[in-house]
Amino acid sequence: MASLNKLSPAQLKDELTHLAGWQASGDAISKTYAFEDYYEAMAFVNAVAFIAHAADHHPDMEVGYNKVKVKYSTHDAGGVTELDVRCAEAVEDLV
Image (cartoon, rainbow, N blue to C red; front, side, top):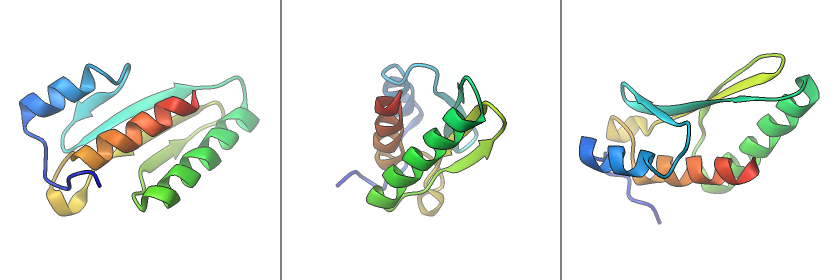
């Protein structure tokens, strides 16, 4: 199981080198994905929901016509944990 301890700034910086396009902002990591249309965006949202359910760890998502922003943070830890990074990696595997 992934650690639920908040990553240090150095650890987070290192993890983000393996997650193209993901950025740290405040106590979270996020990435915006672009799609051809609403149907593709919604299919992606549903796939992320499946990952979230399996991991029992749910991101915040902002959904537009052809863009989806995925944002992970572990509120109990007060920031980004290894679990957030592993879930972001799983989302990356979708695209």
